[in-house]
Amino acid sequence: MDSPQSIETTLLAPVLPPIASLTYDTLSRVFRMVDGSHATGFGVFGRFTTRTTQLYYIALTCKAFVDPALDQLWRSMDSILPLIRILPMLELVADIYMLTRNPEIHERKRLEIYAQRIQFVTLTGPQPVIAPFTLMQLMSLLPNVQGISCSSDLLTTSTLPILLSEGLRRVEISTPKQGSHPIPTQSFLYTLRAKVPNLESLVIRSTLGPHTAKVVSSFNNLRMMDVTLGRDVSEPDLVQIFTLPEVQTLAIDFPETSTFPSLKIPFTPNKLHKLRIGGHYIIVSSILKQLKGGPLEDVEITIRPHPGNKKQGSLWASVQALASQWPATLRSILLVHVGGRPSSPWPTCDFSVFFHLALLQKLHIESWKMSSAQFEDLARNIPHIEDLKIELSVPGEGGLSFLEVLARDCRNIARLDITLDTYPMNVVLPNLIPSNSSLKVIVFETSSLNGPTELKRAVDVAKYLGLLFPSLQDVTSSRSFWKNVSELVGMVHDIRSTLVKSMSSADRQ
Image (tube, rainbow, N blue to C red; front, side, top):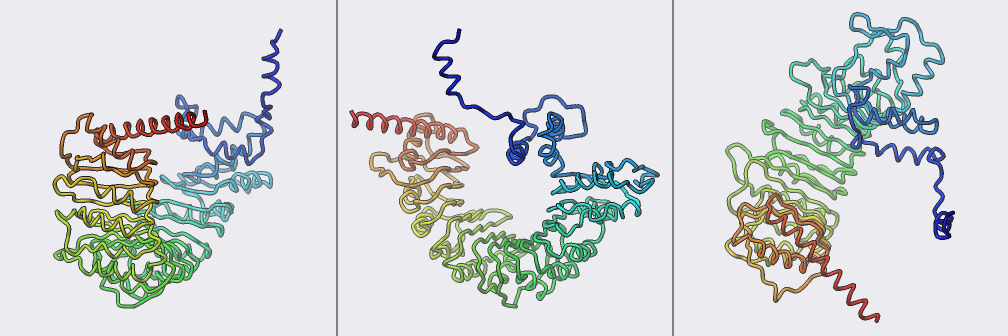
């Protein structure tokens, strides 16, 4: 006989509905999380991914699972072959897929049901060759496809008529494999513009010449564009790309071989919020100087060294011009210098250009060194910063005053990624004033450590960081010393929370 306690437990236990009675939306969210990470063995379909096999068996479990599981199974495809194989009258003749007869109404209906489930197509290998008559049966078959991604050599006369539908929103084309014979990018873009007039996002990893760039500049409904421009692209076409009426995110890269001249035409973007630009400083500076107005908020600048010319003064002048035009709207700036780090702070580096950006929340200055004094000056003048990444030069045993300035003046910072040539290990605890900083993550990378790195030193550093940054959760580094510090910081917070709880309990009593 059950005890009263077990009966009470049974009566009070929540009654869970049968899993088969869950709604379609709930099951879809659950099946979307299937990733194959908990699978064992290889399954019965060796060429399928583990996730595919799992969703296949989930669909066979019960009737309620069929639609949500199959929708997730067919949501993203890496080939069009599974789709065309749904037609039973399809045969492979001399390496070409063709229909031996017209599909019946019910066969066509079944094909459409599966085709409507496909939303994303990422072609990863050679695609089937389809006969022209068969293509006529498959054209405009994917009404719900939102994005396609593939290398340009996979855009063939057998795939384009199937993939390009009016509902398409994103296209990403990567560089073709060596030895392949892709459709010319210019021809593809003409077809894309005609078939998908409302395309919103275009990414092309291949370098575009002048004629292809002219076609790209005519996509008037694009909201996001990411392209690489080669030599001989005209200034009017470049300005046209920057001033496309609906573009909000623009990424343009000029490879090192590009000989694009300095831009001399001022231009005002319409809706551009995010700009990512890369190239040698002459090109980048000329574009930034001619950029006038617009709602710009987020800027990422990647500088490559210009052959035979190491002067960077004009770059910082252009960054100054950029900051002065958007002092009240710029929220994020990433300034990256590739091709080697300067051995000492460059005299042309003027970090004060960031001081007057009232809403600056994210600042990454990669491979541009600054001194400890420059850092302290910067921290005092970017009070709203939330994400900061820098390379800092701290000579000798300079102490940790730069962190104390950060904790005092940058109350909103959540993440600090800092690279140090030499880490000053002297920690001063007695005079430390705890802050209200919200810093949660510090990423430390150092080339050497000054002073002993034994456990006692790690304990001192952990106490220092734990007191200075009450919200600190993780100290990340490839060095074992900082991994020890990270664990000890957690212990500091545990001890603090235990003390706070015990003091609160004592007060109540």
